[in-house]
Length: 228
Picture (spheres, rainbow, N blue to C red):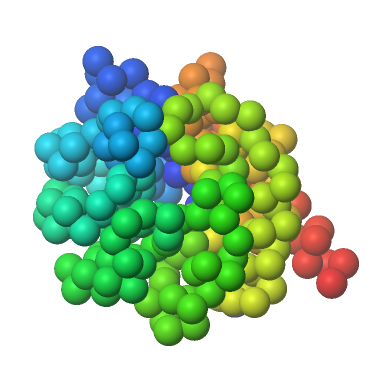
């Protein structure tokens, strides 16, 4: 059975001067969880959050925390973020840590293990780890990781469809340029977890946009399934 649609606001787009309030605002808006982009200034040209911020978010938000390690050596960060409250840890297949080792370590901490692919990375690079049963979520990047506000790369939609067709029960998340227009496209292509930063945190009415994004995405997926 295909997993339900989940909406995760990305904290990178929030007002950092009022972090606790932004966490509570997202929860009140109906978010299924929060997404934290962890950047080391090396794997991507930006610096963001450390484990202490994750711990603070965990104390201000009762839902799940999806932590995306955009770092060169994720093995150095798995334990600190697991202990800081991460519900899911996503590592990049392009990182220096061997994917299998990283995924096994994540699961050893009782955290859901996910693997992320940059826009140009083919599904074939993560297929072996999925087949081994080590992957509990695949994140398809629809922008080049590093900074928010980039344009959505529609070519990644075919990658989502490939994953959904090959592994029907596997949760597929999408991050980058997700809006009221692109979210339903992703859901129709096979995504089940929509990560949206600017679109939600900068919305005039976040609860309304969360509800609309969920409803339109569920409708788009249902329409596609009806044609199969």
